[in-house]
Image (tube, rainbow, N blue to C red; front, top):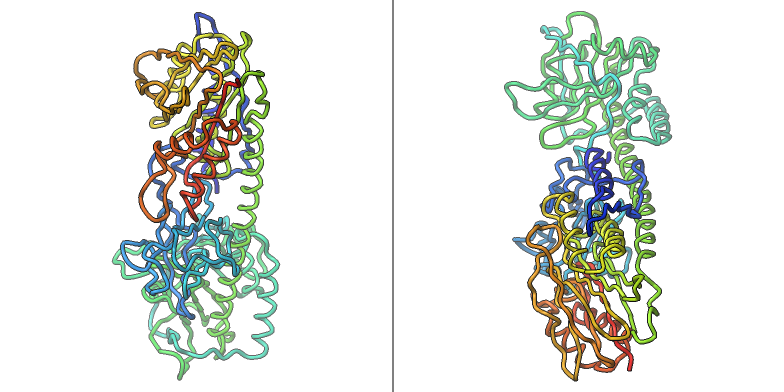
Length: 609
């Protein structure tokens, strides 16, 4: 389920950005054009805007590791895990074919898992194809050396409880006339042909269910069809506990009763304390009956001193400290020699259906999210300016590539009413949807502010104060704002903590200005503008830190300003579009097989001669 509290906070954040603030002694109302995403279909995880690593407390899925049929499960409790041959990797695959740091499995705030090859020797493979980075859908199989990895529902993933879950059953004490049978783990199942036909019927009905929340209720309905039969699914605390929590009813049905009757009767239903204790201590199938069996059963003493009935209790799902179990209360004469094996088979089929439904629901959820993210990506890409022929004397080109579906880099170019050209390149802290939301509103705020304020420093000062007042703690924006007179080449600019632009002038390439201002949204003194004269033939390039901090696959080196300057120096007279392409290609060559880890934005301009 989506985190509605956080979603509400994010939506309120958009509204806050619409508040009024004063600029140049005028009352200006900012009405940003934002990205509207349906609250009923977008799923937002916790911690998106906290700036802190996210810990997923409700573990829904696990990493299933298969090595030649030997299975083990790894809990996916961290937002990012390194897969490698040995510690300190989070998931250790001990085989020489696995690199020390082979791959990275990460989950974003929307619950999307991505596998990324960390420049391994033997690669990461999905469906017979080597991949460098790929989002994973439920059921995808990732091959790393001799290991096959897949994301599967956790053993403790819970289906929705029935409406009777608020009732606590009565635990009945037992006397000493009945017997408790616990199946051995290695016992073979022996089911009669009549039971097999009934099992097939139940399996077919479970296969018709389309929502996991209906599964347990339907399983109870299909296993208690006669008026003297009762079926429950209980959630138990397992292990040794002196003060064990009482069982929780997840679903309940008494044969022949309506759902309303079930709800009324569930609260007064009595279950065997000793059966529950036996299953909770050692989650194995248990049968309490007046009958004595031999061979494949171990015999313990238990009783029901009120009526000759049999109780069968079999686990459906089991994890470290809890289990969901199927509890059947039937007339004693129905508990034949194959009754417990039949109940075990039903429990197994319920678990199979549960896993299939969880996978199907996760796949459907992912499709909804992917569709919404594609829409958001398209909306954001349409906000990047495409009309760059703003002046016959200025050659402009730009590139914006988000690392995720949407990004927090901001690039904008437009003409002001007085003929100047506004040049903006910014970077919102963080990545993904939260950064994109801030970026969208920042674009509207800057455009509106510059309509009222001719001075870039004054405009940024007001925008920064607004962000400081209304943004969550830890969110800030680095930004370069320049106002260029296309005829004279005079550039008035403010650099608010952003990567230093490079200017090629007179045959030399160097940084434009000196760093002296804080990023937007962090407080501090008012901004002051600087001036530069860009003459015909001069060129300038402005980038975000996704360029300078691009990583090498073999070392911890970053692309850095020196490499950027070298690319610039190698193309002293190149057109702006060729310069942007040369920088983008240089970054790609430097990264090699690694995918970009941050948004990349490049803006280049040249004054035509």
